[in-house]
Length: 159
Length: 159
Image (cartoon, rainbow over all chains, first blue to last red; front, top):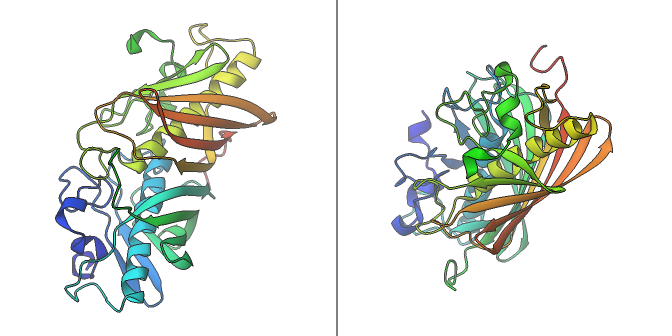
C-alpha cells in the first residue's frame, strides 16, 4: 500500500534525490515518502531493527530525521499544489531545505510498530513554510515536531 | 586519537548502550562518543559516504542525530562530574533521554570534512540539563542546536 501512494519524493529531480532520509537514489537511506491525505500530509515508516534507543524503543534521532524529511516533503507538496500541481502531474516539484528542526519527545516510541508522521503545512512567506508534525506509533502520539522549510536556493552548496 | 578520549558512552551500562546514535553495542549505529574538553564537551564524527542531503553535503538528519546524542552524553558527563566522577573513575554514569531537540541549520555542511560538536551544559533542574551545541565542519560553524536532556526515569519504557 505504501508503494502506491503518490509521494512527492518520487518526483524530485534526480540530482536532488540523494537525501539519506528521503532520496530514492540513495540506496542506503530511509526512503521516506510523503503524500497528501486530504489537507494533511503523511509519511509512513517502519524503523529497522537497529534503529533503537534502548531495546524495544525507537531511536529519537530516527524520529528527528522522519520529522525533518516529512517537513521538507510536506512543504514541497504544499507549494506544488499552490502552483496548481499534484504528484503525478508530470511537473517537477520545488525542492526545500530545512531551516530549523524542532522535536518534542512526548513518550518512548515502541519498536516494531509502524510509524506515521502526520503534518499540517502553513505558508509563512512565499518561499518559507512551517510544517507541524505529529508522529504516531500505531494510535499512540509519541512526538511532536516543527520544521521551517525554505525553498532551496539556486546557490545551495555554492561558495 | 578519537579512540583515546574518555567518552561517557564507553561507560554506559550495557543494557543502555544500544542506542543507534551512541551505543557501543549497536553494531550498525553511528558510535558517537562524547568527552570533556575543559569545560566544554566534544563529539567528533566522520559522516559516511551515504549520509548526504545532496551530493557533496551532509544530511541534516545526521546532524540532528549528532546534536541529540551529543546532548544526552554531555548531560551525563555534567551530572557525573557534579557527583564527583569523571569517565574512567569506574563509577556508572547517569543515563539521560532527550526531552526536546532543536537544530538551526546555518549553512550547508560540506561532506568529507570531520564534524565536531562542541557543547555547553547548564543544569536547569537536578534531573534536567540544557545543552547548547555548535556543529563545525572543520573551522566552519554549520549548525547550532539545543537539547533538553532528562535523567532516564526508572519507569522508562514501562507502561
